[in-house]
Amino acid sequence: MKIEEIDAYLDKLRIKERTGDERKIYAEVLDLRTLKVLYKLSARGYIKAMGGVVSTGKEANVFYADGVDEEGKSVPLAVKIYRIETSEFHRMDEYLIGDKRFDMRRIPKKEIVYVWTEKEFRNLKRAYDAGVNVPKPIKYLKNVILMEFIGEDEVPAPALSELGLKLKDIVDVEELFEDIIENMKKLYQKSKLVHADLSEYNVLFKDRPYFIDMGQSVLTDHPMAMNYLERDVKNVLRFFRKFGIKRGPEDVKNEITGIKV
Image (cartoon, rainbow, N blue to C red):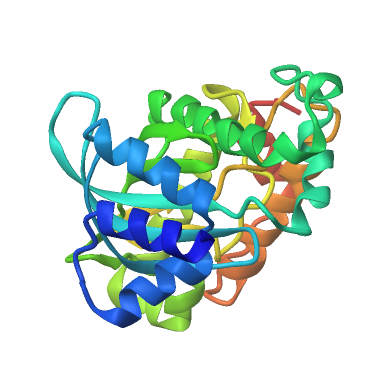
């Protein structure tokens, strides 16, 4: 009966590529509860047509979609879907406990994925409102986040890790480095957030750098915020060192936080 229900919801969702392979991917990576959430978002007008897979992972899958934002404007969307059944969510406790926005004592373990989804949406909104280069958050429901798609023609912008040394052929690397540090500074000083997992894998490049995957980001008053910031700084410096950029981690950290020594 469950397979029939999944098929019924796949029929209700407008999937752009109506091939058997595309339906198979949806059926394999999305459970019935998630398909119902997507259908609700579609019925409310946010999703016009679901497209192909952008990325798949242990914790989440990302799909492309044609959509509409809160102002009724047509926009390309990244549809990030956290897996409801996953063994990875125990790792999320360290980023949730200590966050004053969430009372983890009142949240059942089975609903942690929904809290994590809300947390990423709220982090994105704080960052976006402060002028940090992140995808514009549109809407979230249960374990699904709709956000601005960073890319062109349904092809996502590459991460810095994908570009590697080719980066120096398409951009002034020193300017890119300074842009990333400036965004880390805005994130810390204006958004009052630390990314907490920043590296070349979580920075997309499309004319400028965009920070993504902000579910683990913590408020600057989180007990581990400074530890996470130091890790972020070291990751960024490690990546750019191969391009000859050498800065001391302590100096960069002080620039980001605004601490004068």
